[in-house]
Length: 296
Image (cartoon, rainbow, N blue to C red):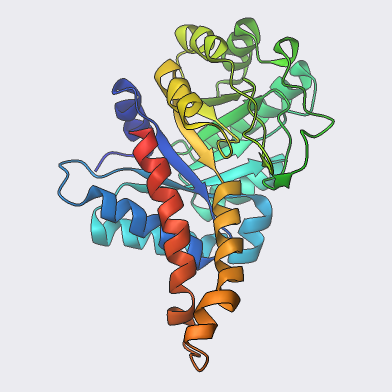
């Protein structure tokens, strides 16, 4: 089986993207794994998956425990599923993620100035290369917000105007001086999704410009809430990984609410958690399937 670096390279060559899905509990993980398995049935190559855990999610679910489960499941099913420590905001967090056994780590210093971002990111890269050379270290460049949530409006600190997007020169400088293995640029994307409309369209031309000059995979953060056509264009333009969190959280929340409206009405005496949660898992699974089909 290919490792994560090889998997990303292969997918990128075919103008596809690897789906990255954040989880907060086991039901979310089960929905993602089932979606990948079901879509891969009968195919020569299985659809790769990346499971993401933010700092808060790592504390809630237990990163070492969930990593052990995923790696065991990967070996048992011979399935290309990997684990990413998403949005580490300090060197200590990166060190902890390295010790936990993640396949990749995101160091997020995007709220700092370019020079400070480079300095802090380089420090993390050097640590990982020295201690865990098999782990991919991803850097983030440009402010796109910090939370996966339903939004009434674009956050004040986030500016999707052209002058605020990651430039080609910034991307080149950042990669050359830090040595990151992946780059998540600001290209009009935002974390979270707007409640009453699609998120702003992406700057596809900017993605193409950056992708044409850098030699590391590009990652689209804030992939929820974007029009399908825009997501597809972004992948064809050079995005090799797409992060999804808010849409999965929304499906989970709606699934829980539907239990009271639907499931318990028909099954008032049901107390088996695995039966109760199946409608919620199914709702999330459909979201993941639609995204994975879009990424192919």
